[in-house]
Length: 322
Image 1 (cartoon, one colour):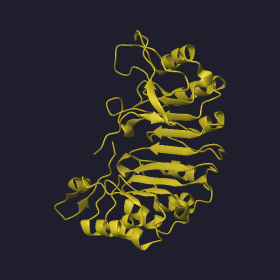
Image 2: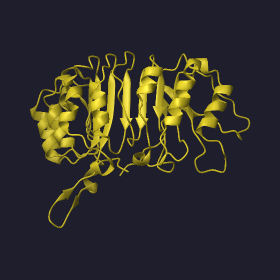
Image 3: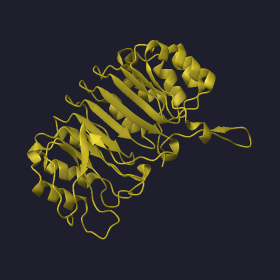
């Protein structure tokens, strides 16, 4: 099973971790040159928790020029939601007129496993930052998404080991006329995923997402069913890229894709971490690679993760769970 590391960039800007209170001799980049990663000292001896780090950041950096913020670890994220973080960001929103991108929960497994991260309702951030263009969230526990509309959001990423159905439906119900890129890690029922393919219908119809060009529905234990639904989904005809990677995609789902609507208009199709046999992989190459579609079938793939129980039941695993 794969792990998830810290972001390297956000909004096209290099991620830079704001130094702790004891750091000496650091030359800070210009406020608008990087995506600022603000994090608390989770396991160290320092009392520099997230709220203190954010306060120091606001005192040190010209916040009127900051374009992107990456929220790192907050205290006891495995047991405490980031509601306090969201409240602090909203309280300071007038100090961040140039802010265009936010990512909540940028933690690797040593800080907090992805499925242990306690999130919160993010609608307040979308309402409080009407000019926000990118929003990312890691962790699905306690996550809520009930914003009815946001006119500027262009990219939405939700990374989880198990995405609650209420969040899937909330995103599907939201009017996002400017959204170009949607990336959902749906996960497994072991870690809270309880949606069905029918819950994705508002997304796959594309009605509320007229600008969507890049769709990722990945890391799912129902990847075959998703692929079958995508094969006839209206939104696909206007996509430039499609990502069904990181899940349990097998021959069944891959064949459904091949026999559905044409995908030769895509610039890229990502299916890495799959359970597709070589004959079907070759069919995909002959059909799509030959048409100029950039494929990711990842030769070092998930077959090694496939287990067979004594009764013959095949166990397959998503890339990111706990």
